[in-house]
Length: 135
Image (tube, rainbow, N blue to C red; front, top):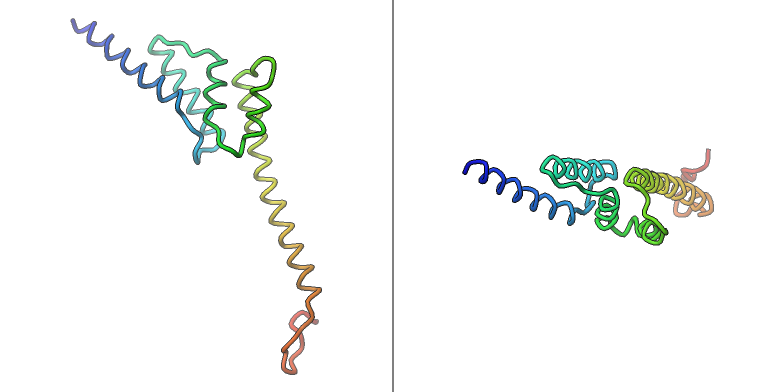
C-alpha cells in the first residue's frame, strides 16, 4: 500500500513538473538561468521515470522566449531539423550577448551625438562670462 502511495505521488509530481516545463517563460531570467532551469526540470522528470527528448527541450525553450528573440525563434522553427538543445542554448547566448553589445553601442552613440550637438550650439546668454565650452 505504501509503495502504491509513493508511486501515485511520483506520477503526480511528474505531471506537475511536466506542466511547469511546458509552460516555462524566460521572463527576467538570463539565457543561462533559463536553459539551466529547463535542463534541471528535464533531469528531475528523468529521475521520476519520464524522459524528455532533446527535441522537446528545444520546443519548450523556444516556446518560452519573448519578443527579444523573435528573429532567432523564426530561424529555429523554419530549419529542416531542429537544432540540439546544446546548439539552441549557444544560439540564444550569442543573441543575448548581442543585446549587451547593442546597449553599449547605443550608449556610445548617444554620447557622441550629445558631444557633436553641444559643439554645434552657440553660447547664448552668458552675460559677459566666457562660454563654458571655451578653454
